[in-house]
Amino acid sequence: MDISTFKDSINAIAPYFYHFAEIGRNLDCIDAVTLDKIRPLGLECEKAMFNATKGVNTHKGAIFSLGIIAVAAGYCCNELQDLSADTVCHAVSTIAKAAEKDFLRPYASLPMTKGREIYTAYGIRGIRGEAASGFYSVRKYALPVMKELFFHGEYSDNDIYLQVLLHLMTQVVDTNVIARCGIDAIEYVKSSADNILALGGALSPDGIRALFKLDEDFIKRNISPGGCADLLSVTIALYRIENLLYHPYSL
Image 1 (cartoon, rainbow, N blue to C red):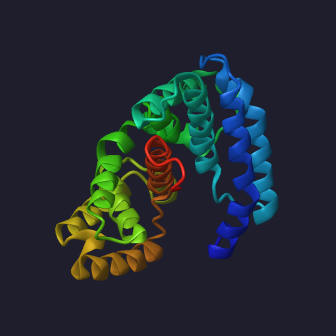
Image 2: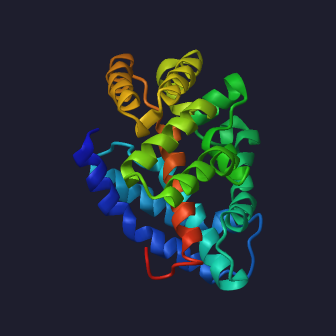
Image 3: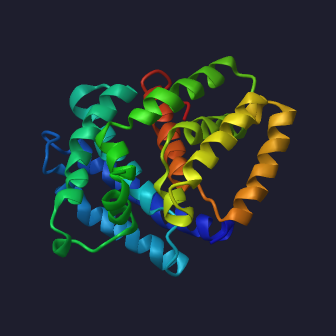
C-alpha cells in the first residue's frame, strides 16, 4: 500500500458515488431496508477497488461511509431540499442502523471480520457504530473545527485537514489501530495527538515538526489511524455538501 495504490483506488471508485447519490435521489423514503437496496452497488464499488489495487484494501471503510452519505444527500436534496449536516446525518443514521445489527446476527451467517472480532472482544462498533450514530464524532469534534478554520480563511486546506484529523485522533476509538496494534495503542494515539494539539497542531511550526516525528513513530510501531482518516473524509464530504446550500457553483 502506497500513494500510487491510493490514487489507483480513488480513480476506480470515484464514479460510483454519483450512482449512490442517484439512488438516493430516486428513493421515496429512507428506511430500515434502504441499506439492502444499495449493498449491490457497494459490493461492485469494492470489487472495482480491489481490482485496481490488486487486492489491497485502501478504501473499504470510506466506500461504506461515503456511499451511505451520498445516498442520504441525494434523498435529502430531492425530497427535503435540505443538505445541512444534521439532516443528512439523520438519514445516514436510519440507513446505517441496519449495518450495525450485523453484529447481532449469528456468527455462522456472516464471515468473521476484524470488525466483528473487535466487537466481540470489546463491544466497539467501529465505523458501523459511527454511521449508525449519524456520525456523532464528526459532528461534535471535527466539523465545528473545520467550519471555524475555513471561516477564518488563514490556513491551507491541507493544514485544516491535518488539524481536524488530530482532533478526531484525540476522541475516536479507532478499530484500525486496535486491529494492527491492540487496544492499548488507542490511548497512545489519543495522548500523542493531544500533545501535538497543545503545540498548536498543524497550524504552528512546533506542531508541524512534532507531527512529522509522530508520523515516523507511527510507521515504526505499525500504527495507522485509518478509521480517523475515514472520518476525516466524512467531515470533508459533509462540509462541502452543506456548503452546496449556500454556494452551489463554488465546489
